[in-house]
Length: 276
Image (cartoon, rainbow, N blue to C red; front, top):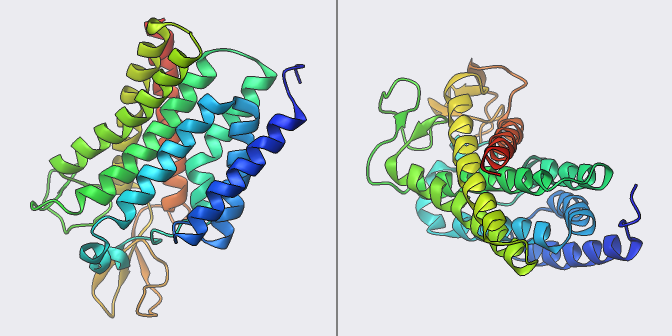
């Protein structure tokens, strides 16, 4: 690895991730395994990428956790539809931040400005998707399936609302703003900052919509015969073993989120390359 790699930077990333993760665990945003995942991803992102990379992770974690708890009582009835709750576990932590951590490693092996752009796109995608889910389910209008436009129940995978789409854009924009601000502080210039901002918004929105597309088509969705409800869980909350309704059995929600972050990173990197 290049000489820029510093043990103390990794140690600092670990300590900072431990503090943030411990606060998240105490507030109920992370499970014990989720805390481990936060330590892994946070240490790599902060320690190898730098603080400008780390602020993207913080912006995602703080904002998405806040919206997860926002009007939580109104969303309790929908919990049975989703594979997991708002307390993130190891799988969710790696699905949301794992790609950004990998990009931080690659940025040390083969330094290039586009790695940061790709990271912004990846974090924008997972943030956009979380905002879209947490705020979209509160829409007064029934969602429509992304593929057919058919009206579906609130919380159905692949269902979208205009409120959710707007929230998705807002989630991507927040990451883009933090990314652009980081480059301005580093005196990289307004052009570089604008490139990261635009690339993150485009990549994040694309990643979020791709997440919905997978949810409407090939993500594994199950049916509980006891409750007569659709769910992402193999074992429903009532204790009934569900049967697969559609989709690929191995393609669960965590993997869908990871793929969405990959789409966000690729689109953002492509956009950044084109803009620069």
